[in-house]
Length: 217
Image (tube, rainbow, N blue to C red; front, side, top):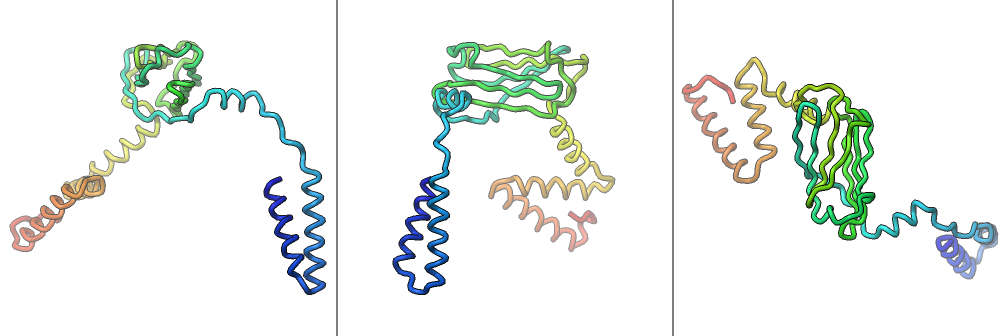
């Protein structure tokens, strides 16, 4: 409504300055249209229960990115450090599991809400057999494996990323693999690393031009 009111005020202001009939007619039509819209605006809705619950939680939501993980024959264990989490009521720490994902919600911890979502888990888990434990300054998420086999990583995305990385270095031409490694180190390195790689690059070029090494890096 506030926006419509501002539009109406502006139209009225323009009407006081407009001298040409055609322009005044256009502005008058717009004025009537805005007045009708304002009149027909529904009254503000009461907040629904979900919104009220959200506002009663207070604070803002923080996405958790740091965690550790481990596995046994039967479980994948994800460790999430959260100071003071053991002081919360148990219902404030919720985990929803599906066969290939889980999401954690910790409500109202030191005025903030914390969330963590894992999608596309590497292998299926048992929803009924999975659970969470609250320890001192830590939440432990226990995902029950459907099959007792070793997981090389947590998610399908991680696996694909590792395979791509391996393929980048696993080339039949050793110099090509080295090139890929150097490029990655250069892209991810700090200024000191970049200077070191540049220096090595120049020196190898000089040696190659003198015929000391045949490898082109």
